[in-house]
Amino acid sequence: MGVGDDVIVEYVSRVPGPPLDGLIDDLYSLEGAPPYSRLLLPAAPAPLLIVNLGSPFLIRAGTDVEAVEYVDGCAVTTPTRAWEFGYPTPTRSVGVHFKPWGLAPFLPMPAAELCDRPATVEQIWGKSAVTELHDRLASADAPHEMLMLLEEELVRRMRAIDGLDIVRHVSTAIAETGGAVPISDLGVTARASSTYVAKRFKEIIGVTPKRLARSYRFTFTVLALDVAAPIDWSDVAARAGYFDQAHFVHEFREFTGLTPTRYVEVRQRFLREHPDHALDGWPLPAD
Image (cartoon, rainbow, N blue to C red; front, side, top):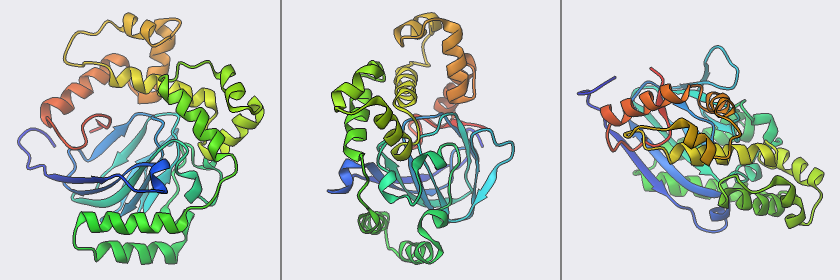
């Protein structure tokens, strides 16, 4: 899919009210023809839930060699490496962009079990519940109505999680510094042992505080890049706090699946072929 193709995607977003606003960045509806049939999603501190209302999509996550088909949607906690998402054409779905700790109150299992291993919506909520939700969403008249229904479903399913406040407090401190805060200071700030904090992080976010900080540091670095201008990678690595460029390149490949140079080429392609697209910013064409 390239320049000149009729690419129309309707993306509608809604910020939920209390009590979900402390767990979720936004709910969204996506419908239409995706810009590319396969998208590469760099690892980011952002759990995701998708309820699929169209044809199945494909996910190749973690170290998987082959893509796996998902019919009803998926849930994935904070990934540690890039993953590939294959959209059907056309596509229709609703989803949730969670804060790092936000998905845990809706899961029947520890978040670490879904780290680089997405679950189907049926696996987390059960077949009958998913069928009922799917029918209600499919009969909605407009995207905003679908998002209201999804918000109501989430409010009903939200449960209390032990240690959530500490994890939210520490995660927020990590985010506010772009991952640069010394991890050793966080347990003291939270008035809890580092062992307890790390355990709760694995259960609620899926990764340790150190790993979350790496994810934030990398995400902040990459999103600050101006791919339209020449890039001094040594300077980028140094400003991001990497000891040497080799370490930076290694981490870059881990988080994006690409070298820094190749990443810029792919980002430039997206901007060139689909300027101001609703999905521009993080996904990359994998075709």
